[in-house]
Amino acid sequence: EAGVVQSPRYKIIEKKQPVAFWCNPISGHNTLYWYLQNLGQGPELLIRYENEEAVDDSQLPKDRFSAERLKGVDSTLKIQPAELGDSAVYLCASSLFVGDTQYFGPGTRLTVL
Amino acid sequence: DAKTTQPPSMDCAEGRAANLPCNHSTISGNEYVYWYRQIHSQGPQYIIHGLKNNETNEMASLIITEDRKSSTLILPHATLRDTAVYYCIVRLFAWGSQGNLIFGKGTKLSVKP
Picture 1 (cartoon, chains in turn orange, red):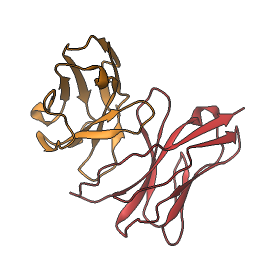
Picture 2 (picture 1 turned 120 degrees about the horizontal axis):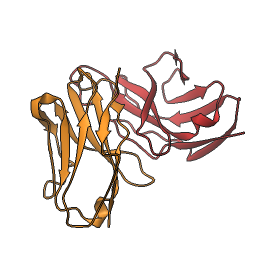
Picture 3 (picture 1 turned 60 degrees about the vertical axis):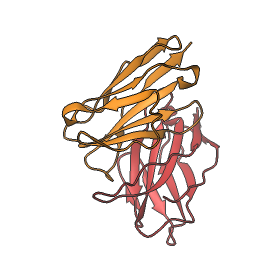
Picture 4 (picture 1 turned 135 degrees about the vertical axis):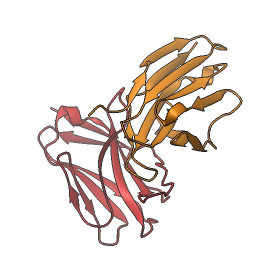
């Protein structure tokens, strides 16, 4: 069975440009998570979806970050405009239901110049 | 969620058992101990979890003390591919519970030839 798929794996942009990351969770998993991982740190939750609904987005910087999960499957995380401090790895994870074991994708490494 | 304490780094000889400790003295009765690892440039990988009994799977064994205040992850025959950062996390595991994963800095395990 395929795991969590993310694309792109790497992205380099100039500051003030927009960027988007895509995630396809494990088939049948209702809960989807986006995490941010800075260099040398553990991942930190940005947003959690239960089906199409964003039920925990308290850590998402809403002035420049947005996310959507149309039809309760794939999800997109967007940053507009990107800042130098947004350089990090963006991880997507999914679980069968909220509270179940989470499985992570490979992540997207963003570099903002 | 309870906080965990792990040594920042450990070394292990290839072929020997790697024993990674974790302290979680404030764990509550309905919280599980989870272990993930993150190999360089990859997303976190789920290893194992347990409540109070010792657990074993194809990747590792988890030994939890009787008072549940600490645990040890055991990789029975470490290989070079086990070099990674290992995260010990305490969280709720139940239908509908939020049980967010809160990552610390983990233990950097270096397996040496």
